[in-house]
Length: 498
Image (tube, rainbow, N blue to C red; front, top):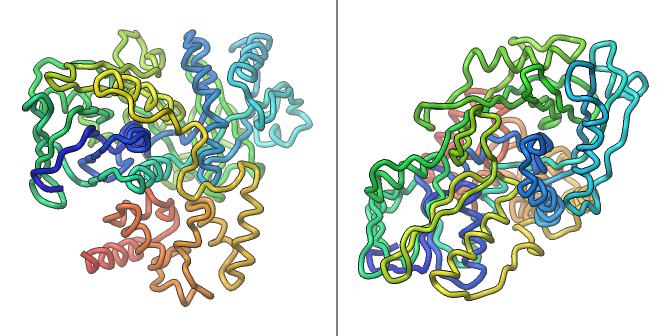
């Protein structure tokens, strides 16, 4: 991007909000550039519980607009990306001393019908003494409720939004820091420092979607003092070896009013999370604490017959949610809704600051941002993303297994487990990854588990992967299964390609 480049919209931040806004805007005909100071989805957007959900517990805080919008989005996003999104069934065991059973059933009935559910099955009541989901639990649980939500590969969701934006003409720059944003000649002059060196670009409008760093952009690059709009709330997760054999999830209510989820994860593991606590530090330094680890282990062990212990932990991850600071007294009570603020106008140069938001409502957030952009720059195209498909998502939501079988027939010489993983991550683009491969020998150098050079090259050339961390933890989750030697070999391979 040369000094003379000029765009309609410059987006700061390569998380789900920034990527979704860039995609929607370029699809309507605006010229768009996006800069992310690290890797795409390297912050909050890869540290979620990985759910596309309405947020059942938000009903308790009367966030009906947010819940309704999120529920309606579940099947929209599932249709948009049926490779990286899939339906889940959650079991909510009931026991005395917590929320009454009638209240829970009423809340779940509301949850079923608020969002216009079509494909997801409705809530049902379980006898946990007979249902398979009661077997891993402590004796004494009799009543349970089973309801629907969806799982998403959160980091890939971001990357695919960015990929679609780039395919439509947006300039996407990773590892590129915005160092200065200042008004100039009725617009903005943005200074960048990144992979291509120092650059500058002019823009008519700036969108600050920097997530946990949104206030840092306002006070730093934009030079405004005293910005305090976000409340950083830390959420941590632990991944343990598989705790049970069935494919359903659990939502556990804790005595302190919080909830945790237990979710089958990457075939051989169980994901447990999340925590909710205020975070005063730098977002780049966030990590799970001993207290959080103890909390998650203790909360899960309250329900499971066999205690979950530290020696079962295979991996942990943490992130901070940049919630809009609404003055709530407790972290778990702070609003999960998004807030948009416009600064300036078309004559002076307008900026839109994005506070809060979540994976599930990112598409709707982008539409709301575009409404504000249209108010400044004028309308170009119509809303279009509701019936769109993300790259690789060109099949029906319930057709994933059929697509795996079709891929298996086309690549009969490759392992079925590899093909299923590639379909889950790339969808119909799995064929672009595999090319003309007839056997694993055609996939190039092996980097552990089922990762080969051909996939790594695809990720570098098409999905902005630069480091082993990008490949192993954000573009894939192969990092769960490879050795330190494999990681070192991959780092050396990537370095040799620069």
